[in-house]
Length: 281
Image (cartoon, rainbow, N blue to C red; front, side, top):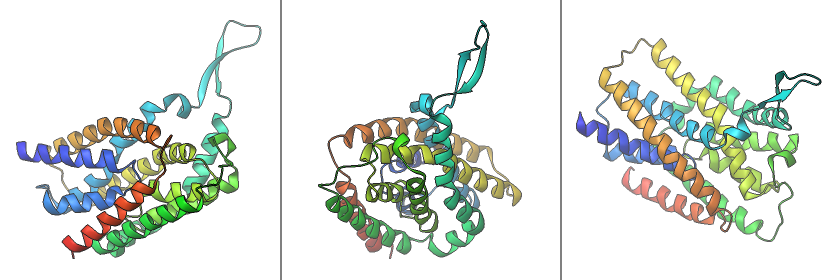
């Protein structure tokens, strides 16, 4: 059991790092699973690698609570009483988040099992890693001398959030694309600043990843598969570690992009994709 705990910690670390950096958590989880295989059923592992993302989500909620929580208490006019009301701009921000999430949510609900069957294999994931890595390098070089025209979530137009949402569909269809990678590339192409692209990507993750985790958990329970106490422990440990690691990674990324672009992640993706093809062919 001690060995399985160490494995769960490793998976949590990998999830916490790769979920927020645009390098594909799926690609890394597949690679780690080939060498450090959890002693659990196949059904549980498929659920585990998705539900563990809840830890990463909670890191976003904790770090950006003031921006994500849309309500505040305001005094009622001519009274000492207070009432609950929306913060300025909060409702519009959440409308933008929901609009951007709709395309990926539809695709995920309709084709989740088919996508896993067709593309959740080392070769397609490796190809996605390489292709998106090349795109990162090309987009950054293309936009090198361009000034962003949208430098906050408030600046994002509804057309912009729809485009970002459509890019997110690529990650929903092709594992290895990286949800954050796809949305950041889409945002950069239409003139969104790196910091805003990253922040909006974090916010999109909350409903998308929560929904994906819930969907997997419901399917697992509906299938009538029993879960052991050891598996529950592995799930809790992996999720908790992913939460802790995500806090540091999100802070690192927000500081990093103040002075650097995303090209280094593109080169890393290309090298990782080649490695996956060589090792897991």
